[in-house]
Image 1: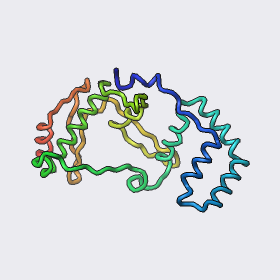
Image 2 (image 1 turned 135 degrees about the vertical axis):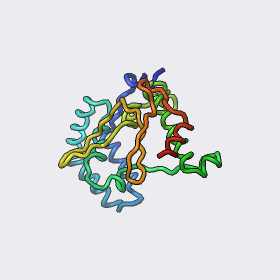
Image 3 (image 1 turned 90 degrees about the vertical axis):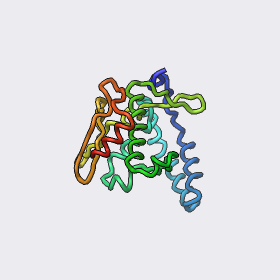
Image 4 (image 1 turned 180 degrees about the horizontal axis):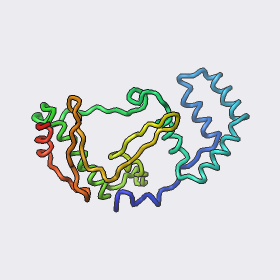
Length: 204
């Protein structure tokens, strides 16, 4: 089974009814909103624009595997606010279990880069097992833009994401200087070992 082998068999994202959406909305906001105002706003929407907009969404959903994806992308690519503060996800890394690696910035960076490269290699060769949740296959399409991708700003318009599938280099920024080295072969196989990366980073 390849990484993307389930893509053609994925069910479309189910579209909830208007009543289901509004009832869930009320349940979610009740802890932070004035209940009476929220209920009144929902009632007005349910009796006003709601049915018309729900019908438009149902028509849209018939033409797309996911009625959410385009709007989700727009939420990230349309705003001109600072990306770093408002849109970028972040995560914290635990200390490396090997004390020698944990105490050295270069060894730690090399370990993280090498682990990422192994993941990239599996994606390129489609040997990464597809994700599942309780036995149900999940969409792997987003993984295609995980590496070798860049957000390109567009003035007065929605930004776009460009992907370069042939990407095989690592870029290192050190004191205002840009360095790069080849990390993968053309077939997606690893071109460096973790020790190689250590030596490259030391040289930089």
